[in-house]
Image 1 (cartoon, chains in turn brown, orange):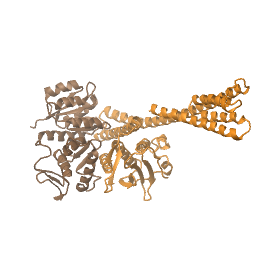
Image 2 (tube, rainbow over the protein chains, first blue to last red):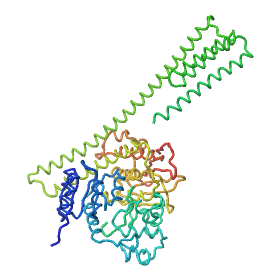
Image 3 (cartoon, each protein chain N blue to C red):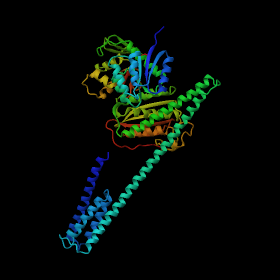
Image 4 (cartoon, each protein chain N blue to C red):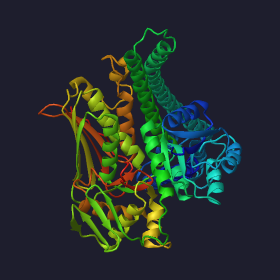
Length: 236
Length: 361
């Protein structure tokens, strides 16, 4: 029998906590619940959950502090729950190492998909060392050949510039995960690059003109408004 | 906000006072060479004081110019020249006249200004009350249905079939979704009005359109959506969350109120602006609604769900508020081939302060 994954739900609203717990239990997860930050921190160390769902707005402490604390000693996947209009919180959480975010209000299928992706990512560790990666990444008709530095669409070479390739390669490496604008700019143009998103957006617009059938209805690289980009993976 | 505006105001008043008094003095000096007698001096200064009191704020400048006028009339321009003559019978009269004119005109001006402010405040209050009333109505309807439907399921004694329960819960879900969108719209308004300054960043126009289309497709899977964008990359400074909301509102309006099944989203370059449009194959917009379409207090809102559905008055007025705050314009028209097309423009580079909005009838 397959061992169930244990999910810690940190959420102060009882009704939302209850709803998430019910959905997860029904879908084959074990759940443990925490209503407060302090309680959550002790549960993380004593129960060793496989994944954390963290609401950023907690009564006793800032959700971001919990994230910082967890990240100081563990890579355990964290999905942050936030309100739509607080882009800033989401970006900060992602930059602090959250694996993903989900906007309130969310549907159950969306939540389950995020959880699957986040758990899969921690189970298949990537070779460290920036974008340098070997092998191939395939999704739909898109293939990223990391050895030959090629991106193929339906088997045809898509001629990308060096920076364009770096962007696609980076997104492919973390397929299914949102990469923030700042993170991508640092990875591609170096830590001293100006935090100006414009160059990234223009590059992305050009990549889409080469990869996507209709750049305005992308099938491979999705925009997360105010946050960053996400490459499609099998699940999304 | 208040401080930097008050300094130029005082400066402006001082400059105006100086200019008018200088003109009066100049005119007197000029006339002294041509005209007989000096009766005109008093009249000219009465006129100057009246003008100053009318055009400046408060009493200060008017009273100051009355004193100045008395000095000029008594000391400079009337016999005996360059000498004060307090015994002269005209002196108290001049002084009292000038002072009276100054304070009367200033008082009237101040009163008119205050009345104008009060009128504006009342009007704004009325709009707010209308919006609140419309919103309360809109919120109460789905809430009533949610409470009713959930109660029916909770109190069920085994008489409801699984299918009936499901249908009740589907309604609850739909109503709750609607409430969420309503709240997002209200939040959007506060985001525009509260912050005052928009938090804009140069975004690629098609990205935002694409995201909106994708979100909409999840919510309304039956609607066919096409998105068309130019080859050229259009960078538009905007608060993308708000513009996404605008596009979603337009699409939702077309489907829920226009009964559209197909939506065409298009972006074109229009001079120094990007023009976003949402056209549909629905029923179109009734002519009488076209003019006031984007008004929060239009009859469409006040009637509130007369067609049995929740109205979109608030959604569309959010669109207009957001687009205006971006320095863009909004318009709507019925297409010759049926359905409606709603458009808005956003300036490509710098955001301009104010642009009017057009509504084509």
